[in-house]
Amino acid sequence: MKLTRQTMILDIINKVDISTQEELAEELKKRNVVATQATISRDIKELHLIKTQDANGTYKYSFIDRNDDSMEERWMRLFSESVLSITSANNLIVMHTVNGTASAAAGAIDKLRWDDILGTIAGDDTILVIVSSNEAVPPTMAKFRQMMR
Image (cartoon, rainbow, N blue to C red; front, side):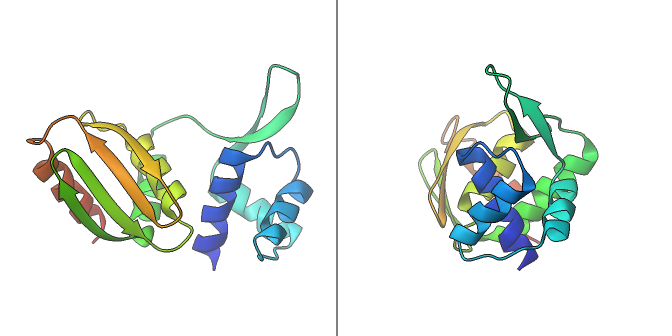
């Protein structure tokens, strides 16, 4: 349940400007997840979310944009707990994930900033990874498979 809730939180703050824990609780409730303020507070801390100010002066929750070892470990764990299968065709890799976790897993892939990955597109339970060349797919898939262990 914790992984699902935290994945939803990551997805929510990517799609909706959230200023308070109460707003986040309401968004979770819309997705049939009930969480206490204390639980949401712990999730925010574990996900390393911070409040940033937009151009209008409004504060909202955002990711810490850093790629240190602790964050990379967190992204890899999120990936490994979400991805169920990996296949490829030419320079494209398709991953199937636990329902509702594709967006967060794709975000984790993006945060890893691997040179051969041009970008990701995520649905609800599927991720499309665009790789720089056909030749770069096998070593990239090997890295992904290693992360799944």
